[in-house]
Length: 498
Ligand SMILES: Cc1cc2nc3c(=O)[nH]c(=O)nc-3n(C[C@H](O)[C@H](O)[C@H](O)COP(=O)(O)OP(=O)(O)OC[C@H]3O[C@@H](n4cnc5c(N)ncnc54)[C@H](O)[C@@H]3O)c2cc1C
Image (cartoon, rainbow, N blue to C red; front, side):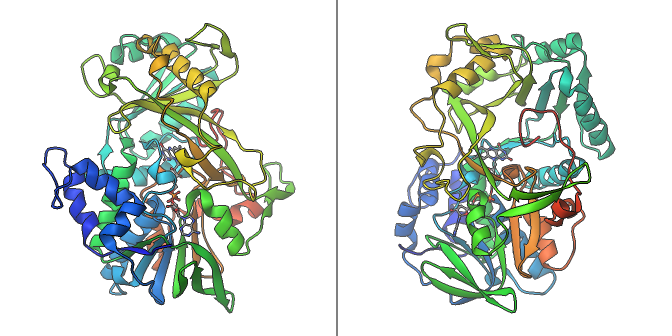
C-alpha cells in the first residue's frame, strides 16, 4: 500500500478556494471545483498528486482517523500548543488507513441540531453549533434551523428541552396542541398534513453541512497549521512502556509517540481490542443494581437515501430554503405506493433539500445489527458495503413517510435514487452516548456513539484537555459513568440517538 502525505499548507488549502466557491472558474490545476473536490477525497487520485512519502519514525502526537473528530482535534490541538508556547501543528501527525472523510463523516446526512433530551448532550451540541457558526464557508454550513415535530408521547420531553434551551440561551420556538402545530407547520408548508402531532420545537440555529465539503474545509485548516495528514496507513497495534503507549504500529512501520488520539468512528471496536480494553463491562443501573457482562459495542445500521426531485421542491411558502425537518409520530403509516399498512407503531424520519445530494435527502430510524461486533464486516464501508446499505423496504417506508407529512411528495416513489447505494454502520456504546476519555495513561479515545458529525466542537475541548485543562462539557461522558451509575436520561424518541 502507498503512503500518501498531504503536505502542510499545500493542496487542500488551495483546492478549498475553488471547491467551496461555486462562483469561481477552474482551480489552479485547471480542474473545476467539483473535480478538485473529487480528486482530494479519492485516495487513488490523491496519491498521484502527492506521491509516496516516508512515514515519520516519531511524532509527539499521533491522531488515528481523518474524520470529523481526528481532524477537529488536530486543528485545535495545533492552535492550543501554539497559543501556550508548547509546540505547534508540526508536532502532530494524522494517520488514516484510507483518506480524508473515508468513514462516517464522509457519508453523514450532515444534520446539526441541539435537540437532545439529555442536558449534557444539549450543552455540548450548543458548543459545537457555535464552532460550525465560526466559519460557515469553510465548513460548508447551512444555518437553516431544525424542527423536532412530535406526538403526544414525546410532548413533555420536548417541553423540557425547550425550557432548558431557554436556560442556555439557545433560540427556539415551542408550539403545543394539535391545532396550533398544524397551523404553524402549514404557515411554513401549505401542504403539511402529518397526523398525531402535538408539539413542534423549532430550533432557529443549527441546520446541516455538506459532508465531504466540510471535511475538506476542515482538512485545509489542519494543514494550514502545519499538521501532516498521512493517508493509506493502517494502525495495527501499539507498543507499551510502564502501561502507557510508546509507539503506534502500522502496516507501513512504527511511529514512536508521546500521546495518541483515537477518532476512528465505526472502527473503534478494533482499536479498543488493540488497546486491550474490556469487551464487556459492568453498569450500575438506575435501580442501583449492577448489571454485569454488558457488551461494550453494538453496531446499528443507519438508513438514509435521496429522492431525486429538484431540491427547490421543498421550499417554504415564502420561497426560502426550509429548516431540517424531523418528524416522529404514532399515526399509522400507509404505503404511498399501494396503500398497504407499513406500520402502526411509532416511526420517525428526517429530511432536507440538499443540492450536494441532488434532491431531498434524509433517513429513518436505524436498525440494530445482531451479529457479534467482532464479526461485523465494517469494510468495505458505507455505500461500498454489500451488506449495510438500504433496500426497497426502506425506500417505500421513507418516501411514504414524506408523503404522510407533505402532499407534494405523494407519487414520487419512482424518483427515489435506488441506483445510488446509501446508508452505513455506526458503533454504539452500551447506553448509546459518547465516551470521551483517556485510557492507558496517554490514549484519548473519542467514541461518539454515532452522534458525531455535528460535534465539530468536541475536538476543541479534547485539545484543551490534552493541554491539561479539564472540560466541564466532556465530564459527563467519561467511561467511569457506567460503573458509577451516572447515566444519562433516556427519551421516548424511536431513535437511539435522541
Ligand atoms: C449514514 C450516516 C449518516 C449520519 N448522519 C449524521 C448526521 O446527519 N449528523 C450527525 O451529527 N451525525 C451523523 N452520523 C454520525 C457521524 O457521521 C459519525 O458519528 C461521525 O462522523 C464519526 O466521526 P469520526 O471522526 O469518529 O469517524 P469517521 O468519520 O468514521 O472517521 C474515522 C476514520 O478512521 C479511519 N480508520 C479507521 N481505522 C483505522 C486504522 N486502524 N488505522 C488508520 N485509520 C483508521 C477511517 O479510514 C476513517 O477515515 C451519520 C452516520 C452515518 C453512518
